[in-house]
Image (cartoon, rainbow, N blue to C red; front, side):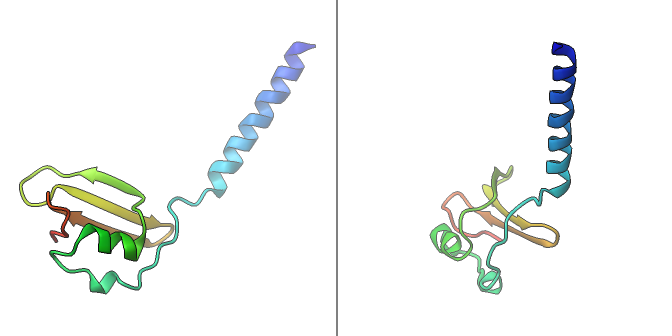
Length: 91
């Protein structure tokens, strides 16, 4: 009796996982109104006020820029903003 129930549970879980993967939209929409207003030297607080918290943050090797904030929304929006060690936009 346990084997059919286990098989049914595994099938349902597998179907749910597959359906979830097929319908998942990565990222989340973000406001691009101020994208053209980004300037080298702007403070991280201003960037976060405009775009909200980033989807991802990562460190960058090298001297000029120390970190990168990544915003994305499927299928076509992508915004990368690099900051220096003083939390200012560096490029």
